[in-house]
Length: 165
Ligand SMILES: CC(C)(COP(=O)(O)OP(=O)(O)OC[C@H]1O[C@@H](n2cnc3c(N)ncnc32)[C@H](O)[C@@H]1OP(=O)(O)O)[C@@H](O)C(=O)NCCC(=O)NCCS
Image 1 (cartoon, protein in one colour):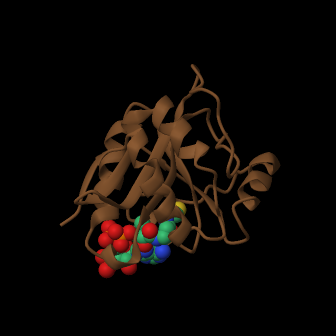
Image 2: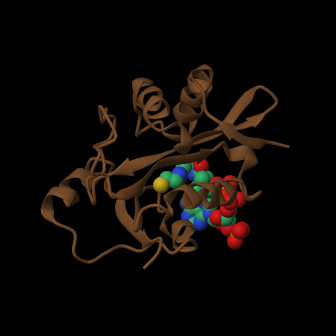
């Protein structure tokens, strides 16, 4: 049985091992999870089976509709950040379908309550998974955001949900 725990620097090697398996074509440098866990540890978790990392979740606040480009550092959490951003959730193939991702989405959305909306970039046709949590594709996305999303691949879609009114 695997459990979600807070991510630490010691987990980064395991996070990169999972990312290499799941995101072969959307690779990011290890400096990306290392930076995010330093800037917003509350939003970074690992799925562990014993000492083995089998999945991870990375999230943090951003300025409204300004998600970072793929494989980029953000430098800091902007003091005027007003939206929650789910950067990535991965579960290794052998552990899928047991509710692990759903469990961590619920945990991240509890953190996201402080912000009016949460957004993410859906890849690999995963938008039906996100729709379960109320994520939808808005129809008023500007060109700068569209171009950034394209950097995540041809099938990437920007999704957003309201956390509260
Ligand atoms: C998406 C992902 C995190 C789901 O992990 P998981 O632990 O299997 O998810 P859960 O067990 O909580 O939920 C499984 C349910 O979601 C559905 N689901 C999972 N991935 C899906 C996808 N890509 N598209 C549509 N539905 C999906 C499953 O069919 C299943 O539905 P069911 O409950 O009706 O059988 C996992 O498949 C993964 O790591 N995928 C590759 C990385 C990825 O796409 N991450 C999201 C990028 S935005």
